[in-house]
Image 1 (cartoon, rainbow, N blue to C red):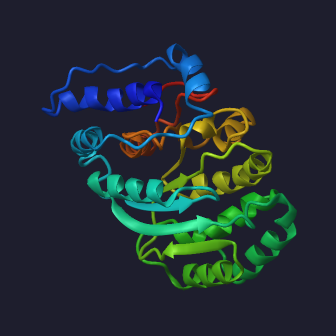
Image 2 (cartoon, one colour):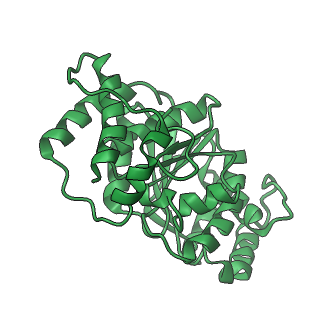
Length: 291
């Protein structure tokens, strides 16, 4: 992990943790511009070393105190995107539980779903899945329509009803969605987890994901897209989405791979649920390091 990212995200969390009775003499750095040059030169192109276990234990203690109760009464679904690390998704699930949310489960958007070349296939599967379902919003955009069908299956309140169960069966059988941990209930908070990759494929995926996010934002109470730091820079998914204006209705955070990244993601989610949508992290188009 870059020293800059640790100081910004971990130090910011620790500073808030002081108010909860955890003592350490570290202060937050809240201005993105003050750290961006170092983050770009030092963090983007180097693998992250192993996290110090003492630092990790401290951040877990401070983070748990920081987020406790902030998502009480919410049901949270984790959605992984191609390239997302299982470890990042697992740590995020733990942080959501620590915040008091009911962990609904975890699904994955497949590479086929996010491939622009598979547009007609995704559209046909969504049409088949939504046959007879009357409360799926219409849209002129193909991927917004596809997203609305998927959102009907996984967002809302209570257990999945018959239409939701049917849609889930169709889209998973067709390979558009992977049910890693089949959601036992529908969710009002959706947290999508991206990967660190920075390549040409991310631009196409951003176009597709933009339509899906629009539909999920309309269906859920809150939607957050979080990813490792590298995704916030040129060629990364968050960079492409932000630059194209495809994530304006949802909150984003590049810094999930930081020691405190999962807890800061929960902070972002709590703000999103209160109507405070923002772009956070150290990436090119982030407006602040954290809420």
